[in-house]
Length: 252
Length: 85
Image 1: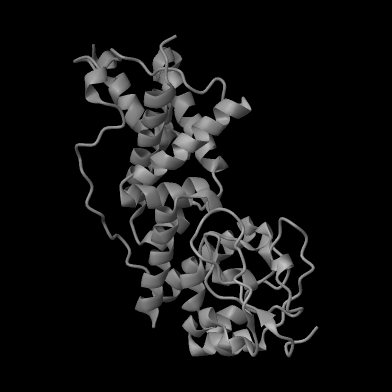
Image 2 (image 1 turned 90 degrees about the vertical axis):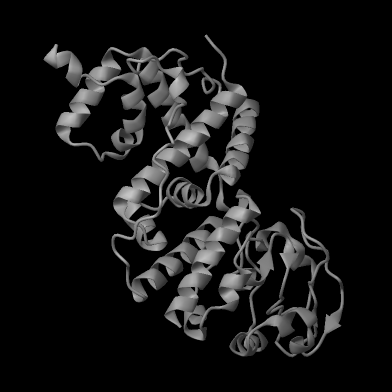
């Protein structure tokens, strides 16, 4: 089991949620693998030196080698010490992004990547941490203000009377959220609603409520002021709630 | 009359929900907000829905996010990368 063994190209055609279908091209040395040629030189060196274990349990991903896969499509392969294919074709190796991120990383950063098997979630957090550290290293532009529309209200003003009291109160939609079917539908809706948010709101809501970063981290990452972050978060969440109500709400 | 003017209207209260959830309010504003909730089941329901929305959003896993969302995060990273090099 050494680096001298021939390796198999895992490049796949198309994209999708399923496991990649190896093209089966045997490649030796690995640098002749077509997908590897897309790598920057320092990554190609690292790639050629690479030797990765393949004993990671299902649900976990091998450190580093996940980095070249994206959305079910292997954009570059690396370190297949056994030269095998099947064990790499399993779900465990996927994370939905960061090939572009990794391709732009320095060798030093690559060296500091986690060395133990991590969950996909762990890796996502790690990528975000790197991004935050980068933001630190180039300095913050405190007080940067994004243009915000002052017209956007959390709730359509027509739902209130002239005294600001509800005319059309919120409709119920979440009492069955623990029901697996309903929860699945709600999640699906949330996902598409998130996708439809304005970019700045989507970024803040994603970082805060999906990635779980705190407000200070988000401000640093996006280089926005705390006040901006609050407004964007409020508007983004309000839109998501409204979308759920529109789709699932019913008057009680 | 003076007291009534200081009471929150529902339309104002819904704009303060995130500040309330995030703990951004002063103690006085918080008391005022909670006083409104205590007499307004509709705004109480609205607050509960916002909490549920946040909870649901938190159930999304990063790998399930739309491609566009992840592309934005990657783009952010790339910008920092470019700015720092």
